[in-house]
Length: 247
Image (cartoon, rainbow, N blue to C red; front, side, top):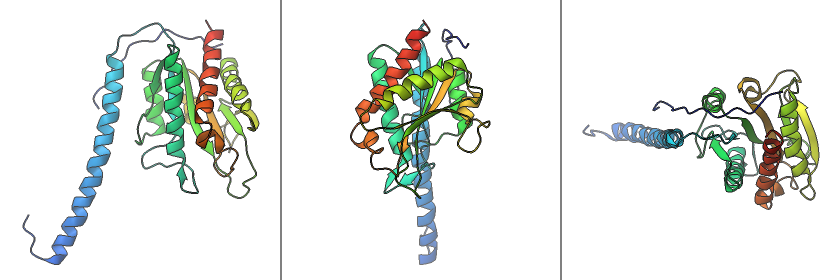
């Protein structure tokens, strides 16, 4: 059985004259490219500042929960009917953070803006901070059959006891939201029952990946469009039940 560790304190390292219409056009394209690059750099710097400010805080003995909003930046994730997974995961992640902090839980977000992070970067953020719990938030999509629906959680294929308990507490609370179907707790990944999602495989803490219904299903979308607070509360309450059980 994995045990909650006391959090260690870590600090991240900081991260011409136009002579023709043709030249003008080339310059305009180049300038636009630099502008886009500049915006991306500003977002990257803002994200680095977020981590720097976080690690400047004094360490304490409270459990540390890492909330991972799936996708972001150039990685939109699934998209359906004008909605992007990266936006919906960030919306719920921010609400979960707020709910947890309101009851005194320490929370670290892998991203708190529309920024791109690779999977290995997310793992590093979680491991460097010695987080006790990681919950990664995602959404499903199945365009061929919009009737397919339901919430599911994914953990390491070895089905570690603590991971199972965390995933079950979250799934049970999401299942209690009126009209939402549970697809259960599953090990491995959608493509292979023994090939784990990287965050479940490489992070050193208790973890699960939550799929908040199908973007292709109108009823599941209510978790985001009408019941976002209830959804976030269910996830945070599940995390709290896990933490309280391990005191």
